[in-house]
Amino acid sequence: MPEPDDTLSTPTGLPDVDTVVTYPPGATSSAGRVLHVEDLGDGRSAVLLDVTCVHPVTAAWPDQPADRAVLQGAGMTFPVVDAVVGGIQDGRLLLGSDLPVRIGTEGWVFVVAHIVEGDGPAAGTEVRAIVDADHRAALSAGHTVCHLASLALNAALAGAWSKDVLPDALANPNFDALAIETSRIHPGGSVDVYRIGKSLRRKGFVATALDDLDAVASRANMLLAEWVAAGAAVRIEREGDGLSSRRAWVCELPAGTVHIPCGGTHASHLGEFSSVTVALEARDVEGAREITMTTTGRPAR
Ligand SMILES: [Zn+2]
Image 1: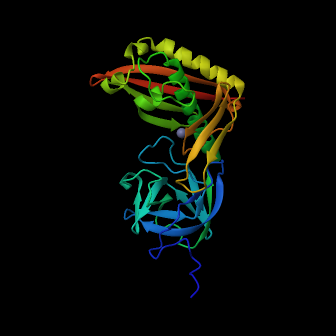
Image 2: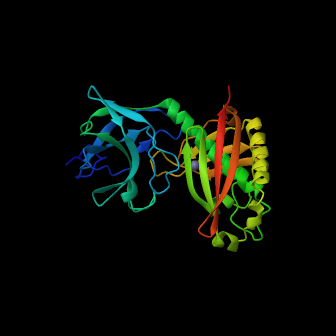
Image 3: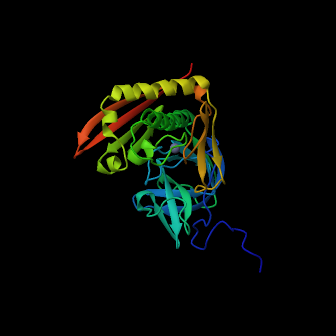
């Protein structure tokens, strides 16, 4: 007996390989085939494609929001009301915050779930996914400035440590990784919230370094100005084209080429910005101090 030709599908109709994603190198349009449509029971459906250019939000670390997009197929247009990361194991599809594992966990298949109203296009339909390119470009800019700002903040606080800790991509103590609470990317910028509590101080962070926040912000802003002036190139490196393939943001900063693991989308070089600046704000919450870093990238032109 020959093998069935539909090797992408298990008997349940769920795919048994990751969705191929084309957004990392910047695609905003893609052709694909509907592999499975899951009725979500609330009048909406999750549409799984073999290939998509639509960036989904990751519930466990929702830094970059989902793209705005539509699916076009069978003579119809289906607005994508949300796009989320899903995982498949034992013939079950779990979406968004129901997914109990991190993306890339062994034994799971990871998919982009395009959430649409109604039934969506039928399995087997050839569809085109089309992303709102202006909104994507603004989110890509926001994600790039978010990474730059974290490196600049780490550098601005490099002298604030009494012990050796995990270094960042520029070999500075990685305040961002050790203190981050939430990171949210929006068109053209980002908001990162850091928590300075007991555990961070135990790791050697000298919290008085944040007493003069304006001085910290101005050190970070000087570095950011230098990096933007250099027009550093940005690219995404990836081990494969599946949703869970490892990817990294690579930026050729004057001090050296930096690699940061990242599943999002990015600007292609820092010449896209006329400036990148951060503002820092502190507040005290439940015995800890919280620092909010708001980063703004102003487009060139
Ligand atoms: Zn990232």
